[in-house]
Amino acid sequence: MVIPGEFNIKQAYQTIEATFARASHYYEDWRSYQSLWDIDLENIYLKLSTDVSLWNQLLNEMKEARKTISTSEDFKCFGLLQISYGNVYSKVNTKYD
Image (cartoon, rainbow, N blue to C red; front, side, top):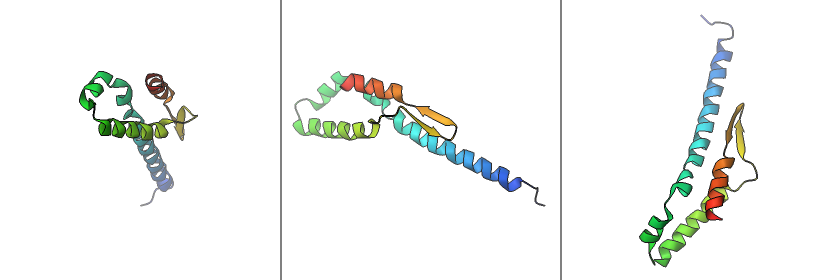
């Protein structure tokens, strides 16, 4: 037996779940940058020492990461759900600029 409106409710739940999945993935991407301001710079100096190739690799990775987080916006909306990342961006820039 088909209940009137059942398809619409099912479709609404699927849309909500898909929106939360996209927002969750986006959040995890930004959360991965937490290590940029949590990292102890002294440990980096000790690990990389005078190895120029390792320093070059680190700088290139940081440059690529910076491209990802460099944006003029400080939030992203997923329907009615908003993820604000301005604070993260500000902390990373303050530490490395």
